[in-house]
Image 1 (tube, rainbow, N blue to C red):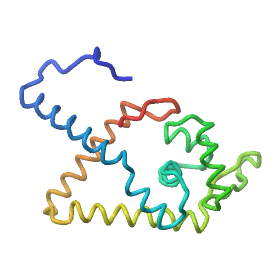
Image 2 (cartoon, rainbow, N blue to C red):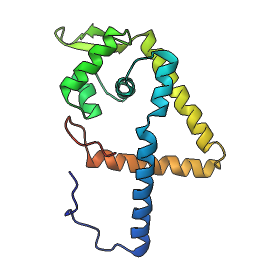
Image 3 (cartoon, helix red, strand yellow):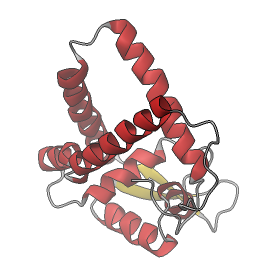
Length: 173
């Protein structure tokens, strides 16, 4: 975990400090916007009213897990307690969004698979997100969008490196 006592760059310039300050301020603004979870709330309202936004996080992380998708893998990827992951998955199974299949490698282990309803919900989430991004970024020149997408990916990867997977780890937001 990062703390204020961690070493700071010794060659920090005024421009570097100003850049850090702007990024920090904008992260706070973005956290407030993202905290409202409007993309997730819209997708839920359009497909499966009554779900929590955390349910959509489960569907989202399933696409990033390499190998078998289990409750443990979901909890680790989401950086949540395994019992919380289990409750979310159980609720999604009971609502018909996910189903449990037996592992071909170990029949005692349950694998998670999206149902047609789960696929529809994920498709709606992606459509709502894309629509928002088009509204925000649609008038950006292609060069700026390309540069931003690469730099933003580098930035997020840096956060993931500081907070590698594992339940109980703090979320960087």
